[in-house]
Image 1 (cartoon, one colour):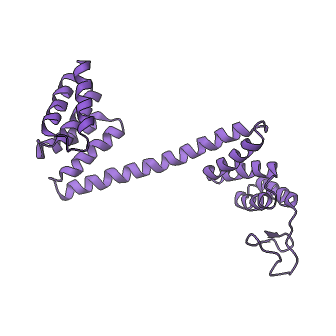
Image 2 (image 1 turned 180 degrees about the vertical axis):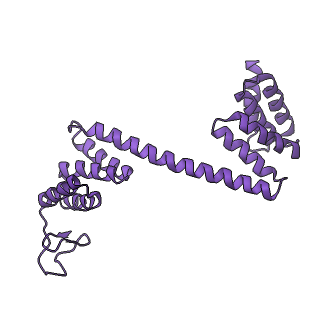
Length: 224
């Protein structure tokens, strides 16, 4: 809630301004107008604050909710924007521009999550490389690096790390299985089939990935 006289914002549910004592405005349209003015001025945070009050006072204020979504998207809060747009679609599926706005918010959310994922990926690789620097026989680190590069669709890089893991632990069914997957990605079907078959021989029904190994090996034999 907002005191337009003192230009001070108060928590939702507040009744009066603690400075001037006047009652806080409860006209959703006034909050909408002020929110749109702030948006036009490029004051995104203020716009979000005022438009949230608008919608809080009148949940059926569709223009307020729509423009709150725009302001949230500009503030890189695209997931929240999508929630407001979804509410509009549920009640007014033909609202002009709503699907364009949803698409833009979805794209913004995708870019944000992509950036976050890339940062996490770089941190993951750095941690695993540090582990190997500290212990050159850390088979789990080599194995994890190989799987990381599989996920990144870089089988060439994955191959060098799984080879190091296999050198340390040649009788690991999991490592041989991963080797088979990498070789398949590289188009080396015969070698992949041999690695998968070795993984089958080294594993047994008690292994959690037993059925997956058998199925993958059978798939490679069928392809051959």
